Image 1 (cartoon, rainbow, N blue to C red):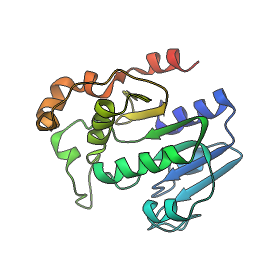
Image 2: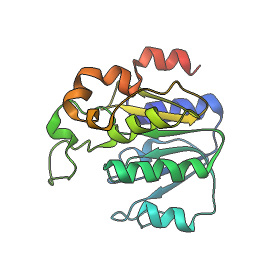
Image 3: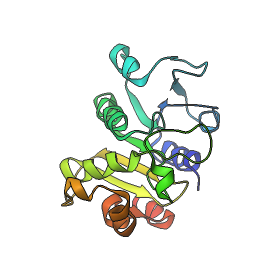
Image 4: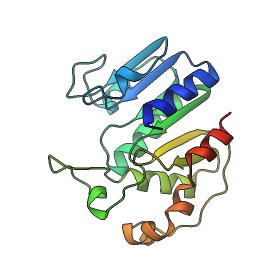
Length: 191
C-alpha cells in the first residue's frame, strides 16, 4: 500500500467528501486521490493555493475530512501544520503524514540537498506529539517511508526525554516511538 492507497481507502471507508494536501510537489499523490472536493497547497507548484502552508492557514475558511501533510519536512513546520490542521479538521476526520520512518540517518537530515531521498525530521514531530498530547490517536503505518495517522481520540503518552530524540535512539526504538504498525494492523484497526 502506498500513501494514495491509504488515503483513498480511508475516503471510501468513512465516505469523506473533502481533502486537503499540503505540499503537492509533482502531483504524484494529489492526482490519484478520488474525492468530491480536493485542495492543494504548495508555494512552488501551480495549484489551488500557491503559498506556504502557514499563509494558507491564516486565510483559510474551509474545513476538511482528510488532510495529507507532505510539505516542508522539518519538525517545527510539520508540528505547525499538524496543529493548524487539527483546527480545520471535521469531526471524525483524519490527518495523514508522509515520511515518518526514515531508513537511514542521511534521509532524516534537516535540509534538502537537491537530490536523493529526504524524509527530513517529520518523525520528530510525531514523537513529540506522542509524548505530549493525550487527546490524539497517533500511529505510523510501516509502508512508503512511514505514513502517519492522526485523529482526535486518546493515546497513552510515551516517556521520551528530549535528548533521546535523536536518530540513534530512534533507530533502536522506532516501533514504540512511532506506534509503528503493519499494513495488516492498519487494515484491522480501520475497518
